[in-house]
Amino acid sequence: MEMSRIWEPLIVGWVILAVVMHLLWMWQKKSSRAGFVDVAWSLGTGGLGIGFCIAGNGMTDRRWILGVLIGLWGLRLTKHLWDRLSREGEDGRYESYRREKGQKAADRFYMIFFQMQAVFALIFASPILIAANTPEDVELQLLDGVGVAIWVLALLGESIADRQLEKFRKDPANRGEVCRVGLWAWSRHPNYFFEWLHWFAYVAIGWHGDWRYLTLFGPIAMLLFLFKFTGIPITEKQALRSRGEKYEKYQREVSVFFPLPPKSES
Image (cartoon, rainbow, N blue to C red; front, side):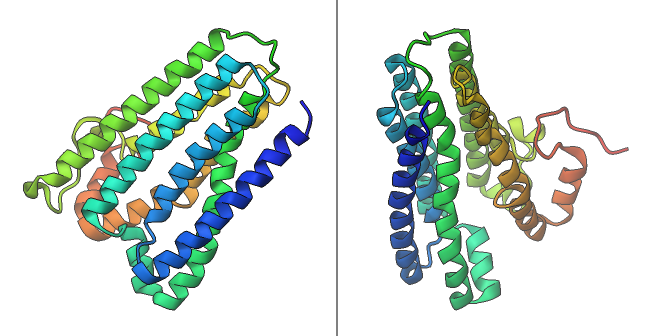
């Protein structure tokens, strides 16, 4: 595969997303709604993936499969994040940072943070680009079916986890309580786990070409971000602040990420 087939779409995609994120940053300065950067990230990642499928020169059927999968993933996650922001207002993570650091300091940080989201979207969409440029003479194989099966399982699991948490939060009796229903009794972050699992779908579908190992960027990067940056650490810190000892007990008894049977305190 020619290097130009990789670098040219990446550069064009980055420029487009960088402009969009800058415009969104300017809007959030006036609205104080930084949480919409998450919506832009999911929509941008899905849009980039579809664009990469269109620009690719691999087998048409495989590019169609990839485009549909990443497109549906992007639409589902974008709708979920949009609905949550519309219903609950500003994301607590961004609100807390703005309150602790002040508006001006937060705006300076968010300018960089928003541009990093453009880079992150590019990183996560890159496995789609690799898979979409799998040699055209490589027919659909068992691994492609495995990839679709992983995608279905992951999206189903993430959707169930999101709905269980949403239903729990809607009940006034659960205010200040820790969600331990369904999948949340086996993992403190089942939605994150299935989101991470989802990226292995593109590894399987893209495992036919010379650049197959680059498809691992998706799950590796997602695991890194979830455990070190925007996911688990911030969410757990916020949960401890709002739920205290109840969440500490939850931490002792339930796996942080991988779904496992809960422990019982002696």
